[in-house]
Length: 225
Figure 1 (cartoon, one colour):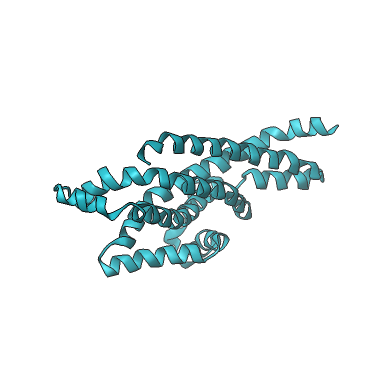
Figure 2 (tube, one colour):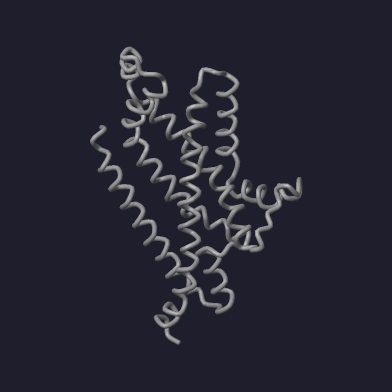
C-alpha cells in the first residue's frame, strides 16, 4: 500500500477524532467564557471577600498545569469521594465529561483576566456619564461598557480558543479518542510514522478555519471601536 492509500484509509478515524477535539474545545471555551464574566466582575467587585475568592480561583487555575488539573478531576476527585464518580454507562462519555469540566474551569480563569482587562481599558468617564444619566451598574455594564469591550475581547479569546484546541490533545492521557489519541493508535498498530503528517495537517486546517472565524468576528464588531 503506497503512502497516499494509507492516508486515505487513516482519514475516517482521524476525522472522527477531530469531531471530539472540536466539540470539546467549543463546549469548554463557551462554558469557560460564560463563567469568566462572573469571575471577572467578582474580581473587580468592591466586596473584598468576593474579590479575593475570584482572585484565588484565577491564581489557582493559571498557576497550575492543565494536565495536573485534568489528572486531579479525572483520577483524584473520584478517589476522594464517590460523589464525583461518573457512571453514564459509557466510558467514553464519562471521559468526555471529566475533560469538559477540567478544560472549562481552566478556560474560565484565562478568559476572566481577558474580560477584566478589556472592561478596565474602557475610559472611566463613560461609566460616570452613564451613572449620571441614571443608569444602574448593571445597565451601565450591559449597554455601555460591554459592547465597547467586545472587540477588545475577541482577539485574545480567539487566541485562547486556538490554545485550547491544541491543549485538548492532553485528553489522550485519559484515553479519550481525539486526533492525538487516534494518531497514536494508528501509529502503534501500523508502525508507520507517516500518520503524523495528515494528523498535523488536520490540526492546521482546523486552526486556520477558526482563526478566520475569529478574524471575521473582530471585523464585524469594529463598529464599537
